[in-house]
Structure formats: structure tokens, C-alpha cells
Image 1 (tube, rainbow, N blue to C red):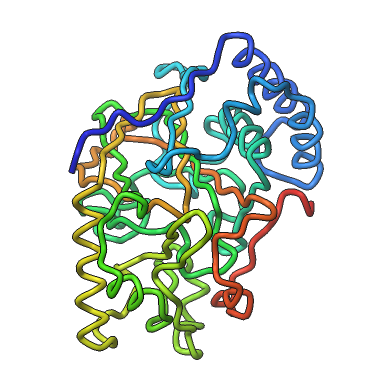
Image 2 (tube, rainbow, N blue to C red):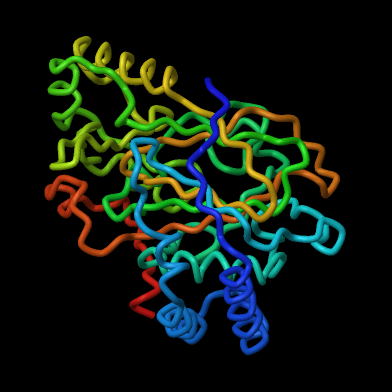
Length: 332
């Protein structure tokens, strides 16, 4: 794995001030970052008024890296921020101003989404290590490598963009990322992985979806060819690879090896937001030892759909999504 200098988009002081004032006004009006239809409508109204400078900084990912770091936002004051929550369920309105800032940025980039079955349907998630979840393949883990994966790969309505905003990262814990546009695969392996051979099951963060796992889970392709190049749908921790034939398993392993070869590590600082193209890039996290003393790594996460984007097979529309419904900000 390489330590990367990710493509950076630097926000200037006037733009950051504009964002800050907008977020403060919304928070002052609603008194919370817990999203409601009224708050989401206000966010959309405000985001529509931002100028070209911010819109240019929020333009689509435009390099083979499949990601960029948005830099220059106000960093949370570490002392005033308070303790890193012990889990998302206890986070409440911690870092509420940053929730709204991230939601404004997400709305400039596209349509923010949430999930009924994850973090009580909030549109901005708190990603923190949680006691008892250390070895899971979810954002609450710590002591294990969070395997590189497509966010919400099990669902046809998954986000096109994933945003990770840093609140606290004293230990410089890295997010890993690998772009399908940088791997080297044979035509035969691409053809093999482009056929729908295996399902991707819902991860442990979606407890209510587990009951659907035995109800004819749809087989999906790992790779998909678009006019612009390959995209992928990949989550090895929740893919029953043992059910595939040896040809498919071998091709899948070669893809895993290639993604490992091109993987980069991005260590975020407070005030930085990593934006990942979820169709091009798989992301994960290196292992670390959580202290649970209020100083552990703390990220905010938002998911965004981009209207009109054609990066996925049309057959996905027929999938049941394991009973999980996405909540759309623009429909609020």
C-alpha cells in the first residue's frame, strides 16, 4: 500500500466563510442536525444559492484516482468538540454544525441519501470505533483491517459518491482506497467478472436486512463496462466466493490482488473531506487500537446520488435490495 498525496481541491477563505454562515444560520433556525423534511428543504434552498467557486470545487471526480480531498474547511476545535462518541447511537447532535456543512456540500454534489435501516435514517453518519464491534466488517470496527469495498454494495440504490469528513484523527489512521481504473486485468478476467455469478449480501450494519439474505439473493456482476471505462461493485467480506466455480474465484482473487497493488492510504486531518467515487473506488481502513477515552478517530459520512449518471447495469433496477429503502433528501 502506498501513502498517497491525493488530488486536493482547496477552498478559499470567502467560500469557507459562505459555507460557515449558511450552516450556522440553518443550525440556529432548527436547533439540531437531525434531518427533517423541513431542514432538508432549507438545505436545498441554501445550496442552490452558492456561487460558481464552490460548485467548481464540488465538480465530479475527474481523474483516474477516483477521489479527491476537499481542503480548507473549518477544523473542529479539539477541546470544544467534546469527546469522541462511544458509538453512533450516543452521538446525538455532536458536531452538528459539521453535519450541516457536510450536508450542504453533499447537496451541491448531488442528492444526499440515507437508509431507513442505518443510524436511524440520519443523512450524516458518525463513524467511530465502538466497544464490542472491534472485529466486524463495519465502520464501528477497529482492530481488524476494514476490507476494501464498495459502500453499500449489496443495494442497487447505493451512493455514487461517498464523503468522509474528519472531525478528529490524532493517530493519523488512514482510509485506504483503490481505483478500478488503475488495475491491470486480462480481457478474460474482465469478461469473467462481468457476468452475474454471485450475490453481495448486506453487511452487519443492516440488521433488518439479514432476513432477506436467504430469499433468492440476486447474482450481480463485479465489473461493468461503461463508455468511460470500467466500474465495479465489490465487497469480498459479504460475497460467498466459495459458491463460484474455480475460474471465477481465480479471476476474483486476481482483482483483489490488483486492488491491493494500487491501493493508497489517505490520512485525513480535521477540516478535510475525502470524496470517493463509489463506482470506481473501493475504500477501507487500516487496523488500529481504540482507546475509548474520548480521543479516538471520528469521521462524519454522507452518501450522494448523482442524477442521470449511467455507471451501472440496467438489470440492477429489478433487485429487491434486501428490503432496505433509501431515503432521498430531494423527496423530503
